[in-house]
Length: 154
Image (cartoon, rainbow, N blue to C red):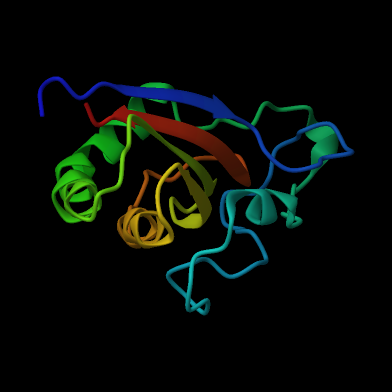
């Protein structure tokens, strides 16, 4: 597993028409998270299209997000589980993988709102999503952020 390499790019998601301001730390996004009322994880694009509470955008304060290192560290904690439970089974079923890409929508409370996995069979993607939906990231100030995590299976 040491040869596995994780790559990440972090981006602010959603269609925001106002400048980003200082959302109150106590407020959270209005949509349910995966761990609360939704039975299944939604797609990354769908999650990033959902509105979020921006708080008072007139303050002009930057919204802090998780760093690349924080997201990678949390995802790396689950990499062995993804490999053992999903990658190995995909190969046993005859699937071929090289680089797996996971796009993740993360809410300010650290919960995963949505994710999309590619490539792989439907079974493989569902397996990876079942691991990702339970990942708990550190809390951050922005209403939501997007992250892309990649790992190599070869």
